[in-house]
Length: 125
Image 1 (cartoon, rainbow, N blue to C red):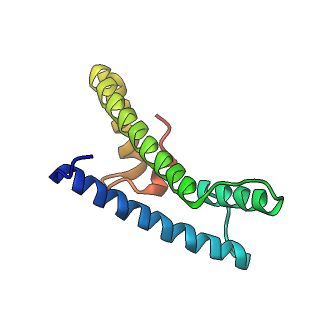
Image 2 (cartoon, helix red, strand yellow):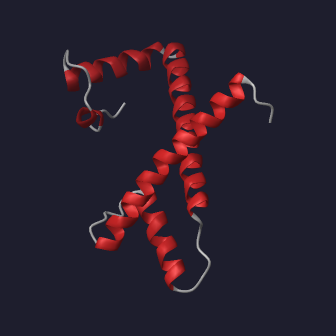
Image 3 (tube, rainbow, N blue to C red):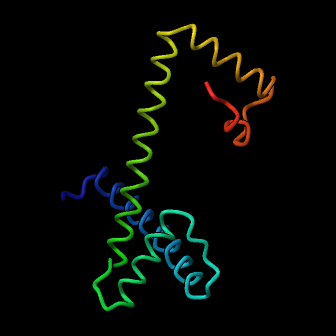
């Protein structure tokens, strides 16, 4: 609560994140109203469900609650991904035979090129 340098920076970053999310949500809500939105992601499903609750006269989520849900999923996903990658590196370092198999598979699928998003779906090991 004290206005320290770190707290000021934290508040500013939080304002920026909330502003970005608010803009994304507004854009998506406009797309939903126009009937051109693709509800194939978490935000689309959340907003569509929220819209149905409001139409049925039920209490839906507020904009702030939607923003908090977005932040929660983003940061929780980031944490999960970093833990997964850390453990992958630890296990590959421990089990060098799997490390060699994975390396050979990457070279077989990608050659000397940097793996692309499309090539990742072809990696099984």
